[in-house]
Amino acid sequence: MGKEEQLAEIFKALAHPTRVKIVEYLSNGEKCVKDIWQELGVPQPTVSQHINILKTAGIISYRKDGVKTCYRIEKPIVIKILQLLKEEVGNGSRD
Picture 1 (cartoon, rainbow, N blue to C red):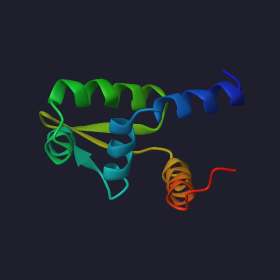
Picture 2 (picture 1 turned 180 degrees about the vertical axis):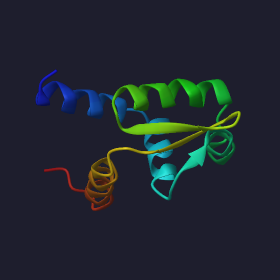
Picture 3 (picture 1 turned 135 degrees about the vertical axis):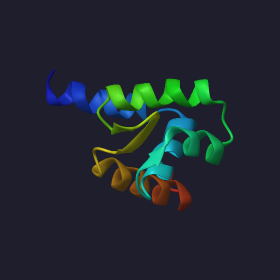
């Protein structure tokens, strides 16, 4: 897969509000899946679907801790990209 395709996959993975929220929540450090769905108030199966999309895009990774699965940001640049976009949206820029 070329760089352009990888970039497109990352942006596609971020193209949903719940996935943006997951990335923002994980930007504060590793969290287990139960913590994620409780924090976001989203059903566990829904969170798992979104997590799989983020994993496939390489944005997050995981580790097993006994029966728990914990997730972390694998590409910290994604957090910076989201911050820049939020600033732009917050400024009301519509160039």
